[in-house]
Image (cartoon, rainbow, N blue to C red):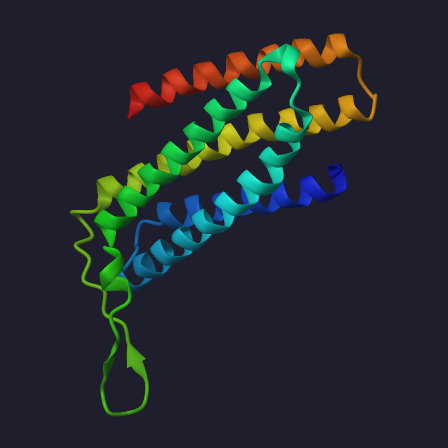
Length: 187
């Protein structure tokens, strides 16, 4: 696994996060759009879980540097990401419960279906704000993980010294810990 594979994956995740954040921030969201956004966000979470935990964290787990209690911090980071995903899911379920999403549309006799999501836009605004805040947090944490993955790959390729790697790894641990404190305080 190398940078040429990892970088596009991370860019794709970041682009999707950015576009979801932008879409959720639109002021004139209607029920239809929100229903669509909720579905897109659910798909994104499924895709991200697979990608992050199999590909991205795979690199770190294979590296498994014992001298840096690597496994602990990686496990910690995975838990944080899962907590963010759970929090987003929780908000999405308040905005649009999953069973509503699978309702068949009403056929008005002219051959096409209309999906009517009944979403009280004012009532779910806090949940929408929470999704935006969680996606922003996810992006920040993803940035930390990405830096660590790329650093690990550079270290494996002997492009950087063990001293530099160790220093950067310590920064990564500090950043993850401060992120965790901040995230848990906000939630």
